[in-house]
Image (cartoon, rainbow, N blue to C red):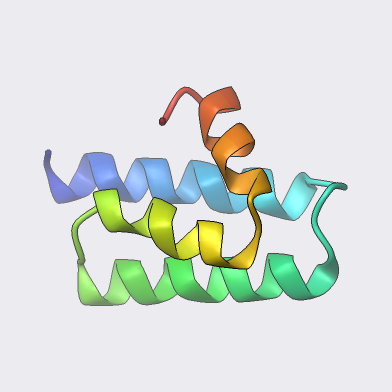
Length: 69
């Protein structure tokens, strides 16, 4: 998958995180921070789900809702 598609997915996840009321402000902040690191380092997309799940199990549901998982 191209970096452009990954970036679009990561931006969609960031927006959903920021609008979400099921995550604490700390969880939101940590999640966005990790996503931004992924963008800067241009890492593989697949492992971001595992990193986000370390913050909250809710990310499994959120990614499914976004059609990303």
